[in-house]
Amino acid sequence: MDLLELRHLKKYYSSHKAVDDISLGIPHGSICGLLGPNGAGKTTLLRMVTGILYPDEGEILFDQRPFDPMADPMRIGYMPEERGLYKKMKIGEQLLYLGQLKGLRESVAREKIREWLKKMELYSWVNKKVGDLSKGMQQKVQFISTILHEPRLLILDEPFAGLDPINTNMIKDEIFNLCKGGTTIIFSTHRMEQVEEICNHIVLVNAGKKLLDGSVSRIRQDFKQHLFRVNVPAGYENEPFQSDVFELSSRSGDGLILKLREGKTTNQILGYFLGREIPVEGFNEVLPSINEIFIRVVQQVGEQPTHSPVVSEIEK
Image (cartoon, rainbow, N blue to C red):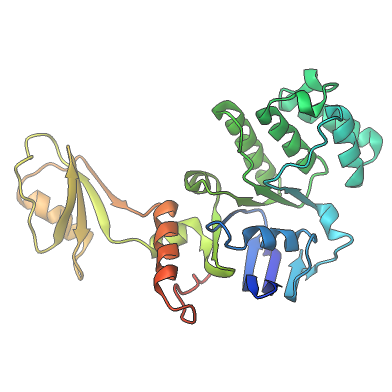
């Protein structure tokens, strides 16, 4: 079941189509990566989801109902890439103010602020002004302000910017904890390795259009190139590894990357090695990374006429 559903969403600025007929669903309890090159329409899409912008056409459903621009933003947490903290306000005062804006009673907000500041190792800074903090510490305060009211939908745009590895892992752990607790998360970033590590669902947009939409595992399977890694022991450096079953794509040390020929099976690859009494120490399929898929699809878009489809949408 989808917590958020977009139906034929469009947003135009003069002659520029920022979002051009996008339909998609964000599954309840998922961590969905929203991907796309600069200018793809991601920010415009997120601003419509949060009620900051209104679509020119189309419909947004939140929790199976038409989006209510007055009530539903109170159930959403949005952490934009451009930070919005008040530099001269004290941390505690600012979090209390923002929590109450999201509907928290003062006593509840104070308790949650204490809890989160301790969890984020910021409690001793509660009476410091935001401007006195490092960029990484400000980022953690921004994160707390976004999740303080326990939103149903959490939107994070480049949440790890300015964070060192330790604090990155701290935020990452909290993202997983929130998801386990039932929060649905949209995660927008340019860091593909983070998408692969964190997300279980991705949406790829470019030039205002949706190109891909589906689970990470399904998309990687759909873009596989029938490559397999075979590890053999030392002593076979001069072995040509030629066969009508596979093509030797590359080799590095004991690792061979083999491309299975059309109509052949993985058992036939293993049969080749067994028949020659070559020990196999490791065997696994090589699936493309999200980064490789991203580059391939976006490059294909540039090579196609604008009126023709580039990639068939992945069926859910």
